[in-house]
Amino acid sequence: MITIPHAYGFQLVASKTPLRTCELPALQPGPDEVVVEVAGCGICHTDVGFAFDSVPTRHHLPLILGHEISGRVVDAGESASTWLGCSVIVPAVIPCGNCPACRAGRSTVCRRQFMPGNDGNGGFATHVLVPARGLCAVPEPLPQGLTLDMLSVVADAVTTPFEAIRRSCLGADDVAVIVGVGGVGAFAVQIAAARGAAVVAIDVDRERLELVSLHGAGLVLDATSMDLKSMKAAVRAFTKESARNGIGLKIFEMSGTPAGQTTAFGLLDHGAYLAVVGFTPKAIELRFSNLMAFDATARGNWGCPPEQYPAALRLVLEGKVSLTPYVEFHALDEAPAILEAVANHSIRRRAILQPKRQQQNHTSEAAR
Ligand SMILES: [Zn+2]
Ligand SMILES: [Zn+2]
Figure 1 (tube, helix red, strand yellow):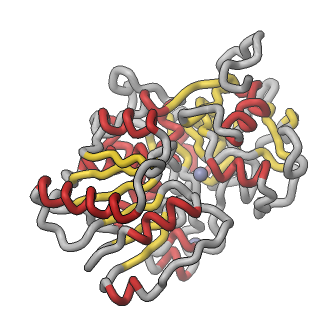
Figure 2 (cartoon, helix red, strand yellow):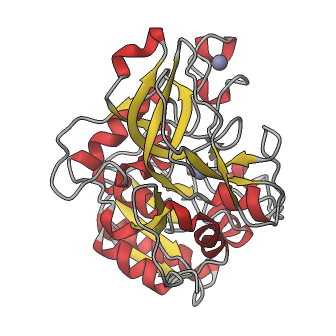
């Protein structure tokens, strides 16, 4: 065990209260565990749910949130010593590896999984203690323009849509419709385009739509000025123009809003596939029988199995998925204000907390 000078983080003490800074307990890795010095930790909608919407964490509070972590392994247990010194991405969901679900290849439904910032302390911290199992090695040196802290968003915002798209078997003959092109959906657009699909993006935010039209979307639809019928017609015309012969649309709900879910379900056509990636605790009303009438498939995914991380990371390293337009950086010490800014939507991009970044003296632009 090494001694880490001044290891600290920001914990949630109670829902609807600001995060509070805390010293980390001594980080002693077990035989199969490692201590990661955090380079960056992305802030996810799920963190906002824990902090502001009373979504309960599986580990009792107080708890350090954050499950989109990249960093360097600075300490390792005896069975994990080969990781020492390596740069890594920590999967958002780390399966146990030997329960019936894991052995059946369904590791995302492992009931003994570990999610940093939910089952134990997470990455809004200088260091985090995690299982070594499933770590994704980051090859160095990184291509120009990419940094280890930036790659934190691969841990969830990139891999979760990657897995949804992989499961849909989306290919070059398909039209993909991405509903909600914020922090997660914008990466889905690029992943779908990298697989050769023609991509439609739907959102209520003009700026987001403009950005994704530069990064993979062939058609963007502003849901604030269109009803479902006109969206359907536009998608149909685009499908015809793009000459894709795939059977049925592949629709990906990434907004996590009742309106987005209603739109996504409403776009189902014959043989369609609907992937549910966004989360909202709110219910919607829908005609469930449409699945039967259209011979359609609806499916969700809880994260992404660690074995798929290297392939998702490769898309980023090869420049097929660009992160830069969609991320912004903030000092870890600003975590309470930044989480609040994400919650009230005054931050537009995926916010990444950096322990090594100096805190700004002034109130951050976004948090104002
Ligand atoms: Zn997340
Ligand atoms: Zn398991």
